[in-house]
Image (tube, rainbow, N blue to C red):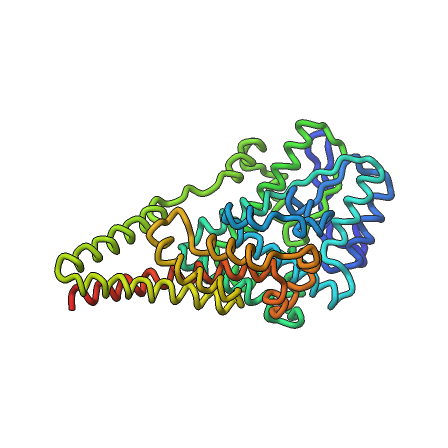
Length: 398
């Protein structure tokens, strides 16, 4: 039995194999020390950690973001994911400064020892991108935007981590802690964020035992996952491969988010046609309304993001056109213009992780500022589309 100084543990016997679940706190030096203590015994022939390949790479190669192709990120519409990664990194940096320990130290220690001793390292968590997409799949689009904005604002606005967040970090990881405020009594967040990952990690451990025959595995997981993983190891819901496959499926996207923009385009263009048929002056007034409102709000978004004056002008000119072509967003054009006009330097990429720890830094660094320009000019154009649309409708029915 563990003494009072140890982190919680559970041992699960699966056939001829044993899985030791070590529940850790991601801001605790004691957790890292206990990982070292357990692995130094030589009792374990494999080490599992609560990481997916992407988070593993971010942990051991923290400067990879500095090597990203910014234009490619914009073209592939991965701006929101990159902004979220930067925000989480900023939150992690603030934790390191407040507690004097880098979050995830116990995972780093487990990885280090596994590599030095040449023991298999098992990455048992589900890919973060799949988890986030399944979280988003449980929410309506306006709840998704509210959640993203709330998370981004919450991560960046606080100078020190609150006591409530510290308590969450003692049981979960940074990803869960950032959602904690929103996940209370919210099954639409709890299931994909916690329960599904418990099932997934248990299934990954079972699959590794079946395929590789590991006899003794030390699994280093957040304390909040210990009970759930143990329950699913003892009572698997199905074949491990089936469980993994089901939990890796991306939610089916509704047709409406793809269809609605085209419906809006048809309605706007129909409004122009009706306006010109009634009176050329009315038709031109509708066009002017569309350009001024849509372009103006997109330009305002770019201006708030401190874009280059020519980028602001580009937003004004491009948004009314891109809004009539849902395959191209205003943000793609404005971000490309900003990169051309004020190309980020090697130093900007090098300082990206540091600069994004403060709200001011997001505007100061050319990389993060370009991401903001993409996001805010896109948001401005989206709002402008609806505002201008209603304005056109009012003129036609007035």
